[in-house]
Image (cartoon, rainbow, N blue to C red; front, side, top):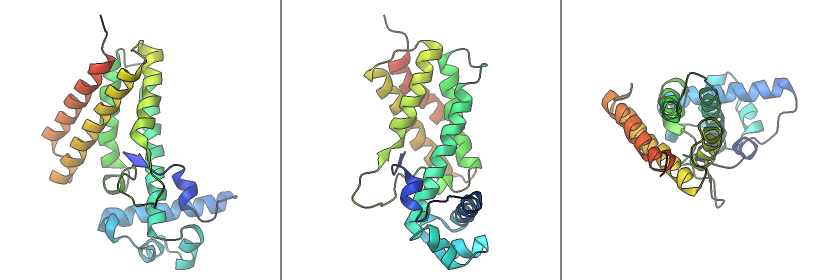
Length: 211
């Protein structure tokens, strides 16, 4: 999972300074997300966004210079929604061991594919061509944030080996979940279960107690 740093500020031509403008941008992104779900990210156009949102093409261009800018903003919003899910899960007192928490996070990722419009196509922007500037690695960001909570709550190791293992676990699960939804629009259940199993197994390499 990768996303352009500060994706929303990169994509939006005019930063909203009033609630009305912010709401308009959200409406445009909502329309774009539904268009992506209908036709795919590769076929998205700014004209489609305008029509779906019931807005003029000039309104779209006021905030987004082109279709890639729309997709970058969607990717940034998707990432923030995924992080919000992870934050809620990590604060859930029902998780009494770190394995429960990590498994729940992996289920959150599956839920994002099913419930966040555009996620299964745009995800967090890993394929977007945003020019010469290298995209930031959102898996690195999420793994670092997650490890900080796991260290505080469950006393797992806090070192490079733990970060690397958690990052690998997320990436393995990410790849399998993507494949599951390519095989079946509702998600191939067998492959989704594999994503939980293999993602957790990778994380255990660095997070399990050490002698």
